[in-house]
Length: 92
Image 1 (cartoon, rainbow, N blue to C red):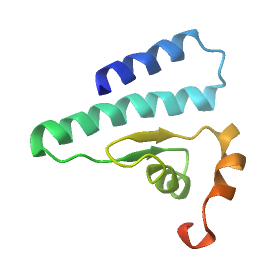
Image 2 (image 1 turned 135 degrees about the vertical axis):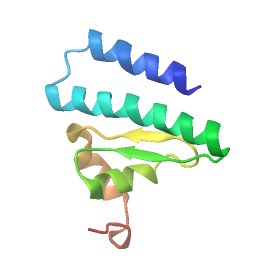
Image 3 (image 1 turned 90 degrees about the vertical axis):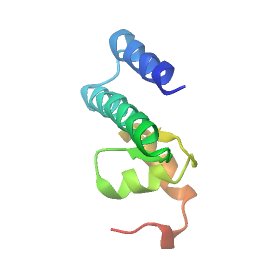
């Protein structure tokens, strides 16, 4: 469940030697998980989310694990992620 995932992200955050940028993404992932839970509780609708440092990559990431999940893409993974998408899916 989402609470368990958020707790795993918190655990990683405190035990990891990840760089500052990736830790910022982890903070965003925790916040987004809570927002998605609230949307589900209040509306009974699920939603997907992508977490990245820019809007274009976040949009792409949100399509990777549908439905009702979220995807975090650290900068170190962008090079591997982009070739998996057709060019027409990449919108600015």
